[in-house]
Amino acid sequence: MFLVGRNGVGKSTLLRSIYDKTIPGLSKNLRILLLQQSYNTEQCTNEELSLIVLEYVVKSDKNLTETLRIRKSSVLKNVLENQNDCVAIAEAVRMLKHEMLLAELEEATKMAILRSGARGLKARKELLVLEEEVKIVEFKLALNDDEVLVNETDEAVSMLTELEVALENVRPSVGIGANI
Image (cartoon, rainbow, N blue to C red; front, side, top):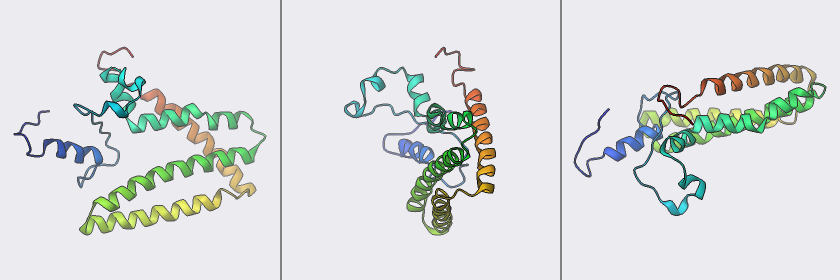
């Protein structure tokens, strides 16, 4: 794909808007990575400065980074190994749900602020729904009902399976000939 134009006509603004998903009609499932031509090296760690371009792009993938963070924490795996403690399993599921909802809420807040008109109204309605979901999940953080514990144990197994499948399917170097 080529994007050609004179200086100042909005090429970078267009790419930033696509990356921020502020352009109407872009799917939420669409994965977009934006690698700046230059960036402020004063804000970067030594580790970030030593990365090759492909490594930097892979680390910039928020979905991959989030999946890896959850996987690395091994919360579900550790809790499921001790299957006698249903309360710990339920708490782990609730905590992860809460974290995921907070991430969605952050994204929805950004959309509600950036959009106006009918799309802005729709974004603000979605934000209100998400805020209610967060309140419900926060309320459930304290519950320890037996039926809820059984359901959340099953959900923990499902979440762990989904995470493992996602990690197996995410191989950024496949198809581009890189060896990382």
